[in-house]
Image (cartoon, rainbow, N blue to C red; front, side):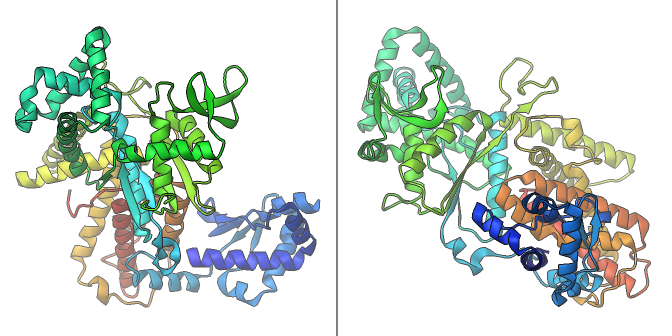
Length: 602
């Protein structure tokens, strides 16, 4: 429906300009162009689209919104092409205009979708937008530490956004900005050299599980042993100056961590390119030089800072962002600024990105707001470049607090996924027993794995990312409600119908015949898929796609309950099978964009 929405928007603008020329002048003077405020109707009974523009126009013109709506409808009806698209508009409430698309237009759009493998979603390769990379910065675990539940949301949201932008045809660069540098490595390398020097000769001596305990041991020594602290700081200097033994130890720690990270990424079916903090080391000095040349750097108590505009600190003075510490060292801010310069291509060998999206928890919102302000003031963000932070809330336990184990430790991501699969396995075996079904063990294991992982992914992505949510295995694995199993079961039901049909998708009649309200409701919802994808691309809210897919599944289940499909006569049979196929195609595509594979049976 994207094309129709754009055409309607243009017709509405023409009607507004014809009927209210004074509004055009006032809007031009204010720098805010006229906007019909065309949106998808909030409820099906209101029609296909809703026009909210008359309410805004009433403030500009000082006239009642209902009078403006009436005049706007008359202007629309005077445009011949409008009547080819819509039935006569209906004015509702204080001045809303409801638009209902004509049935033949909807049928025409369904035929277009039938022949479009992307379910009608346009591809940006037809424009220049795909030539410049879009960077999604997500996941970002720390070397020598487990991936834990705190990495879940960044990893899943980032992957979903990358999938949607890739689907649209953008050149997406998925970056994993791992914590692989900094003072903690002096501590780790010193400890490694002292307690496991053989690891430098035989890298197979330690594994990540040992490294996590190893990190705790090193941290304990660093906190309680002054001589170890001094040795660790000296080791940092050797590492940063390129000492071969220090670099070898550092590389060993990184490699061991990467292998375990990759196990998690493989289980989640996530592709990501590592480009850690260490990558930007050689560009840190340039950040200082650039900011100094622009007179943005100020020395404050020995540290080199940029004071933010419009952001006040505790003493009611502009808040500083430290770029270089008083001891000459760099920090996260320096690395993040170097990354922005590189990613936008400020330096010759950079990425030349058009859009950079950072997916991190909301606790880092102030950090990125400060970094983005500095980058813009320094001129490192291109005129049309987009620099966005995608914040998200916490994963909470049943008590509403941050999810932890009974012992009070942070939940390891590996353990969480294991439990999801185990619970899905138990649920499946119970259901098979209740249905008196017998399945091979390989089938049970495969379905349990896919449903368990899907349940975790969907439970996370279906939440508004801005808010926290409570993690509940029973709820997310339920076959009822807004869950992955519910959507997957709808797919299984449709697959069963299509298997029983003697007609193949490519031989179905194209003479569409829809006679029931539920059929038209399903048609309309399928046609909105492209609008939802564009909306998620712009607003970076995966939950919008989840809501759409849940509503699609609900509509299909009502359709299946209310009208016969396989027992229907022609032309209803072919038309209803087409709706089944299009629903299945849309669900499969949508779930794939969430990183969830579908099943033929479950």
